[in-house]
Amino acid sequence: SLIGLLTLMGIVTKNSILLVEYIVMARREHGLSRHEAIIDACSKRARPIIMTTIAMVAGMIPITVSLHGDSGFRAPMGASVIGGLLASTVLSLFVVPVIYTLMDDVEQYFKRLFGRAPKAAAVTPSR
Image (cartoon, rainbow, N blue to C red; front, side, top):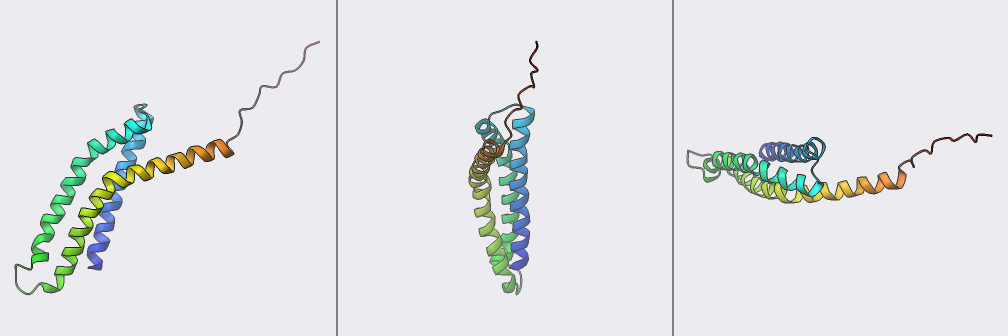
């Protein structure tokens, strides 16, 4: 089941990175607000994330059910991957945007806290 867990981590990471990348791209290139970019990214990335989940679950069902021969030792891997995929789909579509929002707020706070004040133009007095 450790091999299944590693595979699952790769898929979850890929989904999350693509979602955040789409949010950042929408904000920079299209000038959307943070909220609009998150809604847009989640609506456009939901279908590929769900399709990946369905394909992986469909591939793991025969392993989990042990339909062919003595494959009982692979059943835990199938079960852990199926459960992880279902949980990761929810996490990718709901929790990752929330974490992105929180991290963006933290970034904005530190920019205000440690940001440099705009330099005033040096004015030489004329006599």
